[in-house]
Image (tube, rainbow, N blue to C red; front, side, top):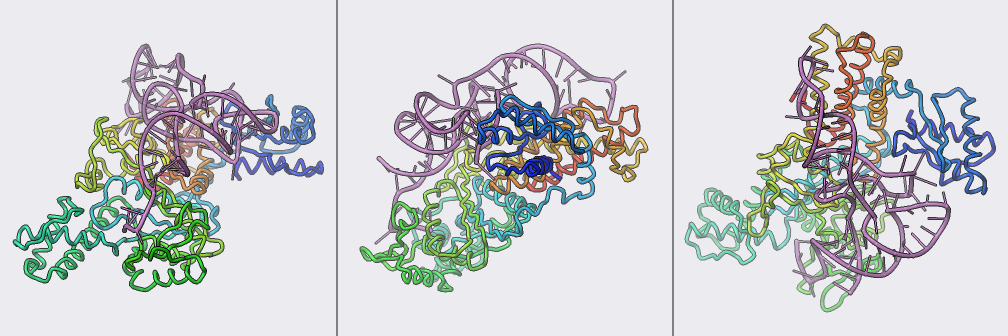
Length: 552
RNA sequence: GCGCCAGUAGCUCAGUAGGAUAGAGCAACGGCCUUCUAAGCCGUCGGCCGAGGGUUCGAAUCCUUCCUGGCGCGCCA
């Protein structure tokens, strides 16, 4: 049982016995400063405020009553403003070790999400070029969020939306054909807004090998062939990059297939039927203002073409039909203006109990030695995700992406990410895991059988120093940390927890020489504690998609 | 002009469904390796939480008005 729930139950039981209701504003939570005990409650303060009485007297009365009851409480202190500060007996915390070792890889998992059906759509980069570092951040975020949601009892499906239907596809094909034409001598100039990256030349090269007749065939056909070859190649490259980054999408959803199925027209019709669309200046508009947007939006242009927004509405309609209760879209922050529009659309679709949540990912500033590295998609000088992975590896990149909340800018310094210091926390956390395993290996060398170690309370009772308790309390907080990260869709909560846990471990390691203790029981107890710590570090890193090395 | 996000220690950032004396790392300075990995640990220094007003027992957190920075405001995707 969690400390928070335990104290709450105690307090509620006491109040009920006195015929009082538990006040709405009352809470039980870990104090920010551990000097105040393990848990704190403001219940006396709130009751006093309601009854215009003295908080101290009420607090004193509750304290006396609870001390008279058999419990896990070590002490209850009363703080000045009317807070009750609870300290639990070491035995309460010591049993955490047994729970962790028993549950192993699933320690931390809870039924918090109640099996809620969630879809996470992320990356969804246009297939017009390789993934760059910004996409990497979205990929790390979406993937870790998925893992965390699953660990907290959500039923999650992951998806990549392929924008393969727009004018940009033609532009891509034209860019490739233009590069190919430089070889074949066909008169086909490079388009003004074409894609200038070197990868276009590579694709053109490949296209010529596959279809040497590119120089002479019909121009429209040539463009469409080039488009197809380019999209296939680029998409394959994207999949390869994501695989290298330990990221997997279950569903790859094509915009083109959505349009071809007539779903977009159907959605368009549905909006008209509901009187939510109107014609003006030869175009069709969707009244998003009725749902909180600041202006209405065009869904079919005066030339008859449907807009990107139209297919996006249809796409989210499709998601709703698939039964998701929560749709999480991870977007670059430069799309934030799009949020009210799509929220309006989802609301207009009228599915009850469906929530839409856009998670915005801010820009990544790529640096090297503190100096900005120039990036420009148009000019083709961007740094690709693949290049970053080549240089720093997946673990370091992922941890760095997840070490900030998603809606703040992130400085990604290639030199710093390779450093081995607290500046680069991935090593700090991984090192904690490696250190523990080093101790365990040494223990085996000294003839201690790790398998024979059992977390009996008599053994664990020797975990009584400040450092023991600090570590135990942190370990006990892991499940609620995951719930908090899930509820706020914020994997960085977990990153910070892991840094704190690693810090506690490093401190422990320095203060207590585990294998050097005189007392055999103490050695065993501490080995159990370290083993449990390694388990939690491993579980936590796993949810971030980062490995936990046995040695470094 | 309208909107979104941000402004917390010299630097990079946590903390915001209201809770106590606001935290961490880096940098600076001073310590700790004959003992399980010093990729580590300990200590010192460092703050009008952008500014003003309001709400209340209590505000970094909520409301409001400003200031500063980034981004977005298309019959583009």
